[in-house]
Image (cartoon, rainbow, N blue to C red; front, side):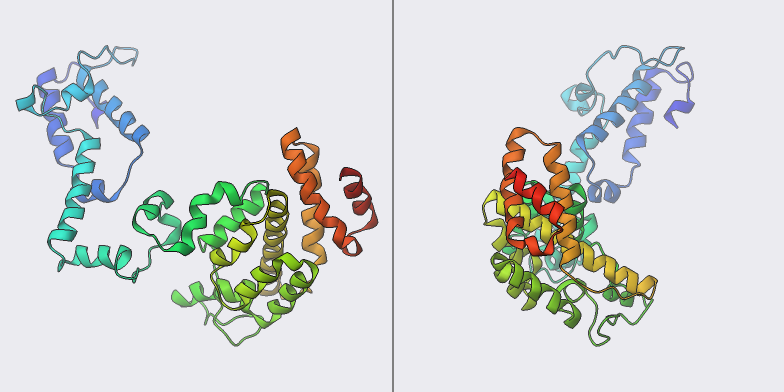
Length: 334
């Protein structure tokens, strides 16, 4: 709308009045509930400044006669009385927080307290919740890994990091989600006895337990992780046993776990969409992990090579499951 008016259509005084009423007519709740980035505020204020001070015939903005922070001051402080979007949003958010404390019986207060205070009774969609905001309001210890993601994704492939991110944020369309929108009954397609949520799909299904038991037999350091997820412990807490390892071992076991989880997901998709039931075996995830680490080793820097070299050394103990050419390549790198 602002660009539809030419510079000669309104005087600058009229443009100031238009800006005042335009900003005052914006919905307060939309600004309070939508957290914008600083770059977006700067872009909007630049557009408002171009409308206020005008633009040349070729479309370039004219030189501003005063800084926008000066224009956005109230009239009694020497400004033009135009609202600052950034300060206005901060004031609205502070008002909502104050109202939730001052009037605890209101609907808005009950929603906020139900989400962030009283045992987190109300669930927020994980994909639309900023981790920085969650860190400020949620101190439940099982979520600490989310804010150390640079640590647990170091050395892993981008696909594996994103897959773990999806798992931690519950970004999978499982049977339990389908049951909520009444698409299917939500029962596991493998065992047909339990509700198919993420824990059941990847760890607790009877068809998955044997797969993870073979992993714990193959890799003794993963016994604690497998026992934890098999007992129904949250994935984040179970992953702590892997995160406490040395860097080379951590890179290797995170890669193996992520490849195993991706393999389970592929098997599940093949069974649901194609009617095929592949055999769950440790060989395929291990081969994929070996290929990824060899590819990363060939194009990494010297410091990263040393870490990958230590991680590749863990493959020497499982040579019976890896083709002979892989064993030769890995042995030559260690």
